[in-house]
Length: 104
Image (cartoon, rainbow, N blue to C red; front, top):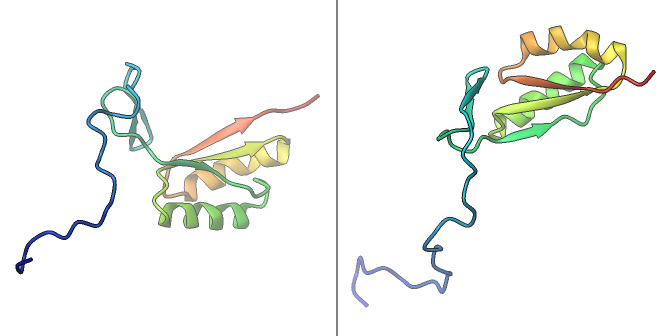
């Protein structure tokens, strides 16, 4: 072996074709993030905090953002959670999507 020659590590080779074909869809914007069409796959996650706990939710969103998350979802099962959305969305660095599921 000479200097600069690649070393075989026994790693599997990359597949010759994509693992799954992407379904054709219309491209939309979610805030500054393009989704669908020919846009790259975006990294999305969901918070595990009570959305009404604004500080904890914003902290978790900041941690997700630092980890590479581009879009975040928050659960809103109560009116208090829904009321917190405006503040959370205005202070979040990434787009916030609300999963609203009120129960009568």
